[in-house]
Length: 306
Length: 265
Image (cartoon, rainbow over all chains, first blue to last red; front, side):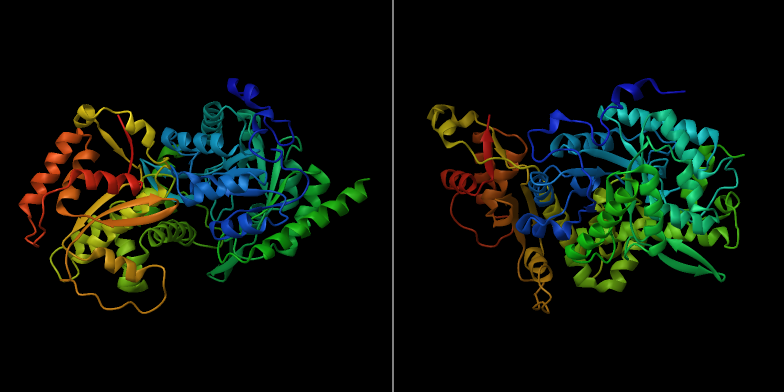
C-alpha cells in the first residue's frame, strides 16, 4: 500500500530542478562528482581554502543549535557548495511516537541550509524515551515494515519532501526476522515512497557478519529508488575466534567495497556518491583523494557504458 | 514471536541497564554469542554518550584526568541516559551529578566548574541577535524610561559561585600547557557570559550589576531593575567591601556597548 502523502512529496529527488534553492548558492542538485562528509574540524579550511570538493554532506544534528560557530560555518559553506543533510538521531524504527521536537529541528535545518537531499537511517535507537544513540537494526518482519514505513511517511509529510533512508551496518540478527534485509529495504521504499541511500560499506559489513552475498543485495534494489551511495571504511573485532566487522568509518574504503561500487555504478548509473569518515578523521586532502578515486571509477563505468 | 515493542524494550534494557537475558534470547547466535553482539552496541551507545560529554566539559576532563572522567561519565550515563536523538543536551545534568558525588568533599568546586562549562556551551550555541538600535532608543522620551523592559542577547548567561571558577576554567581550556595552581579561596565569581561577534566574552559584575541584570532577565521594568541593582549594591552580601551606589546610567551604557542589551519593549 502506498502512503497517501508519498506521491505529493516524491518530486524532490536528486537531479530534479529545485527552484526554491536558487537564492542561497550553487545549484541544489549534487551533480556527477563524489562528495565528502563534512566534519567540524574541516569547517575553517573549507571556508578559507574553498577546496575543489563537489559537494558536502553534514550530520543534521550537528547543526541543531539556534546559532553559533557551527551553524554559521555551514551557512558559509552552503553558499559555495551543494549540500546534503544526513540525520542520525530520528529513531524512525522506534515504537515510541516520532519526536516532533527533533523533526522541528530537522525542518529548521532544511529551511536554513536548503539541502539537495535529506536522509536518515533505517534503524531505531530508543524506547520509552531512553536513547541508546546508535543505529540499531530492526527485525525484518511485517510489523516492523508497516511501522517504520508509516514513520518515514510521517517524517516526509512533516518536512514536505521526500527523504532518503540508509541501510545500516549490523552486528546481530533477530530470530523473528521473516525476510532478508534487502527485501525489507525495498519494501520500505515502496510502501513509504522514500528514496534509498545505499551504503555499500554497510552492505559489505552486514554480508560478512551474517553470511550473505553482497551482490545479491545490490541486485534486489530498484535502480529508480536508489538516489545516493555511501562509501566508507570499517574495522574488525574478534569474538570466540569469529571475526565481526564494525562500521567505524575510520579507515580508507577497502578494495572489496570499491568492487561493490563498480557493480553499483553498472546497476544504478550516476547516483550521487559520498565518502564518509567519522573517527580518526584525516586531513581534508585524504578525503578528497578518496572522492577522486570514486570519480575515476565512475568515469570508467561511464566510458564502458558508452 | 515478540511484538516490536517487546523486542525494543528488551534490547534497550540490555544496552542501557546491562540486563542481557531477555534480548539475548531474541538474537541469532551464529558463531558469536548474543551477549557479545549486544556488547558492540552497548559500547557504541556508551562511547557516543561519553564523547559528547567530553566535548561539553573539556575543563572537567582536564581537571580530573581521563580515567576518572570516564568513570564519572559511565555512572552518569547509567543514571541519566540520553533522552533525545541529539546527544548535545545529554550532559545538562552533569554538574548536578558531580555535586551528588562530591558535594561534601574537597572536590566540591568541580560541579561549580561544570555548571560554568554548561553555561559557556549554552552561550556558544544560542541564537544570534543584532546589537541594540540606538536610534530607536533615542526616540524614547526620558519620562518613559522607567517602563522600558530591556532584552538581553539570547546568549547571555549569569553565573555566580563561591569559587574562582572562571580562572579555573580558563586555565584548563584552549592550551596544553600545565595549568598554573589556582587558590580555591582566591575569591568568588560573579560574571556574565555573552557571545558577541562570534566570540565568548566574560564580564565580571558588581553586586549591583548582577541584581540589575537578574531583574532585566526576569522581564522587569527598567525602574524595578534599577531598584534591584541599588538594593543589592547597598547590601554588599558577600562582605567584600564593594562600595558606591549602583550607577544605572553607567550599567546601561556598559551593557549596551558590550552587546548584552540588544532590544527593549
